Structure formats: C-alpha cells, structure tokens
Length: 93
Image (cartoon, rainbow, N blue to C red):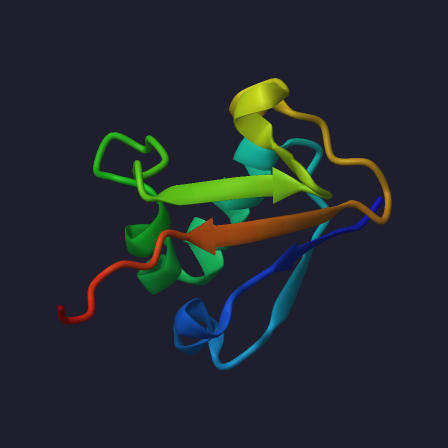
C-alpha cells in the first residue's frame, strides 16, 4: 500500500523540490524513518537527535493531528495523505 507525504514549500528544497513523496510505510514513524534514509536534510528539520518530532512540527493524517491518534504508531492505509506542517513565526512589529 502506498501513502503520500505532502510537504509545504518551505521544506521542498530538502527533497529536491518535490511537493509530495510516496512511501510504502505501514506507520507514520516508519514513513519518517524512510524519509530520513532518503532525505537526511529533511530529517533534521522534522526530528531531533533523539528521533522525537520537533515541537514546532505537526503531522496530519487527512485533517486529524496524529497526536490525537496513535502518534508515530498511527497506521497508514493505502492512499493515505500525511501532511507535514511546520509552524511559521516571525516578522516585525
């Protein structure tokens, strides 16, 4: 079964400009592990040195935050769409 990880514009340079990356992973955690193997620069933006999701990154399976599901153990079904959403902040007053 194939799931699709959707990346916002700010993360696309870390995966060669792609807006989406397909994975055969069974869980969210496995999908991130596979991304880490293929795209180490993206891995550094998503997880810390201990492999935990960085606090400013949210992952949504469809329109549900995986934190409200089974976290990294959340199962990915065929055709699932996992949205990677980094928090955006900054600007001037």
